[in-house]
Image (tube, rainbow, N blue to C red; front, top):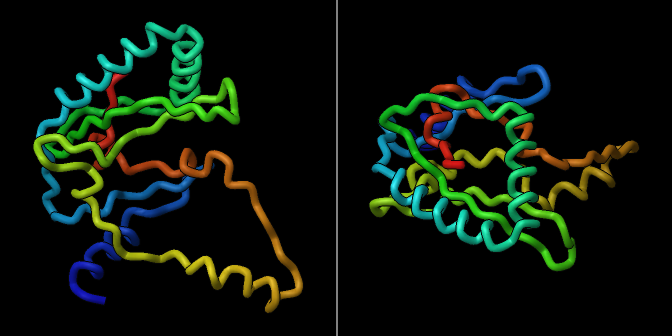
Length: 170
C-alpha cells in the first residue's frame, strides 16, 4: 500500500462507523484540502431545465415531488456551505418496462469549471471482494445466507464535515 492509499485507508477507518439503522462514513478526498470550484450556476441551470420538463408532464412532476418527499422523510439534512460546497445536478429517469416508476439520478460526474465531484474523490482503497470469489463461499460452507439490498445506498450517510459537498437544488 502506497502513501496515498494509506492516507485514504486511515480516513476510511477514522470516519466509518455503524449508527442506529445505517452506516456513516467520510468521503475519500484526493487532495487533503479538497476545495471545489463554484457549482451553483451549473446546478441552477439544470434545475431550470428540469422545471420546464416537469411543467410539460404533470404525472412526472408528481412522481418527482413524491420521490423528493420520500428522501426528506428519510432524513436528508440541510447543511451550511464551506470551501467544499458542491451543488450536484439531478434528473429523473424512467424505464419503459416499469411504467409509473421514477428513479432520481444525482450526477456527481457533472463538471463545473472543469472539475466534477467524482474527480475530486479517490477511487481507492478497494476493499470489495471480487465477485468471482463470492460463489466459491457456497461450496466452502454448509449454510448460505442472502439478503435484499433494496435502498442500500440510502442506508449509508456521509459525515457532517463532508455533507456540504453533496448539496442539490430543489
